[in-house]
Amino acid sequence: MNPPTSPAPISKASSGLQARTISGVLWNFGEQLAGRGIGIAVQLLLARLLVPEDYGLVAMMAVFIAVGNSLMDSGFTQALIRLPDAKQVDFNTAFYSNLCLGLLSYALLFVSAPLVANFYDEPRLVLLIRIASLSILIGSFQVVQLSHLAREINFRLKVWITLPSGIVAGLLAVILAALGFGVWALVAQTIIASLLKLILLWSFQKWRPTLSFSRNSFKTLYSFGCKLFASSLLDTIFNNVYVIVIAKMFSTPLAGLYFFADRLQRLVIQQLFMSITTVTYPALAMVQDDNQRLKMAYRKILLTTSFVVFPVLMLMAALAEPLFEFLLEEKWLPAAPMLRLMCVAALFYPLSSLNLNILKVKGRSDLFLGLEIIKKILISVVLLVSVRYGITGILYGRIFTACLAFAPNSYYSIELLGYSLREQIRDVFPSLCLSLVIGIVSYQISIHVDWHSLSKLILLGVLSTTAYLSLAKLFRFEALSIVTGIFFNRIQLLRRPKTTPC
Image 1 (cartoon, rainbow, N blue to C red):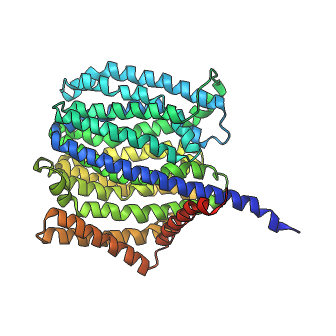
Image 2 (cartoon, helix red, strand yellow):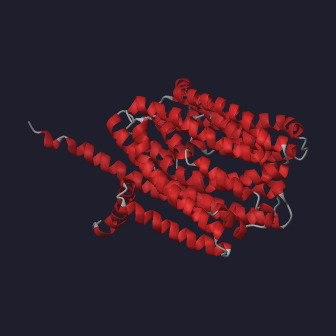
Image 3 (cartoon, rainbow, N blue to C red):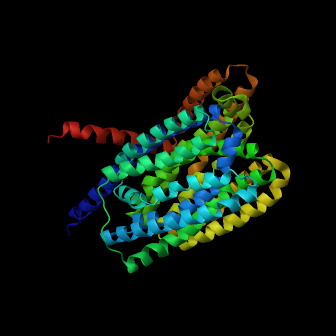
């Protein structure tokens, strides 16, 4: 009986995976923090140079460009990441499939552009859509390269690719806006960023396609990816359905205000959250057959994400008015209350998305699609009722549907991992309660004190963050221990090469 020697390889492999995942999360978080910070700065500069109507035009065509991108990808990215023993022929098959689907997407958008323009009674959309959708063709050359980086959890290289692309594209967009190009500055920003990202990807990522294609590989990838594509298509349409309804039933400038607030919220929150899920999906996929390890890893991710995202959301909601007053002109102030309600609705986004991530890891894209259909029916019903009460009713409807969607999203985590809804609520409840208290107190102080908007942002931001961390330490939040553990583990990883001889 000599069991002590057998666990070593597993422990070593697990340690290596954990180290790579921690490194990947931090690099990806760094990319999101820097990239989205630059993105927010660019959006704020553009907002000063442009008017809500320009953003309204972009909002009108955004759903169609997003649908085209979903068709171009068709779930191949996620399928490649999940495939345990992906070979060159699998990558080739995905590459050529994405190119064909990209051409098909562009052709469909080119032809249907006049129909979209007629729907909104906005003739400027014809040329805008035909030019903006070029980004889909450019993106079709990136799918496999990005899948390679994700499989390798090589987010350091991704940082050095996406960050310069975003900076250069943002600066050029600001220059174009200053020169009076209006909405075309926003279109140019998207195309230039995609093009620069493509050039850098092919310069530094060494995978290259060869002349091979496998029908069996296509069936394997598409059988998994097609359901994710259908889910993504539904998600894309319904994420933008609010803008479609507002633009059609109200006005282009109001749609622009809504779109700008939503984009600002997504830049800050969803990308912060995506820095965790983008890395953890390939990492979790490596242990997809070990339910115990998968549940433990998933629980840590849920604790970490809720601990970080909840307070950011609530603080952003509390300080929406001073944020807009200080950074933007008066024409954008009506978007501040919209941003506050969007942040409240977004509280449930990390929880729902992480639960859905488990279905992708387990290869149950059929269940993923089923849940998306149920949620979209729910959104449709709520939207039909809430639109009667104007933009405020639509936003409260978003909060209501986000609450209801959490239960079905978490159902299969119970079935597949034994991670019950009660356990999930118990794990996130401390961070949620503390974030709500801090957010409400900050909001009350903000509306009752006569300070300059910058003073409110700095003082309340620092005090709220300090209070949140101090109370989390006082009440011994498990999530705080995990976050600090990840931080100190990363410091040790950074120091190790300096103390280890070559």
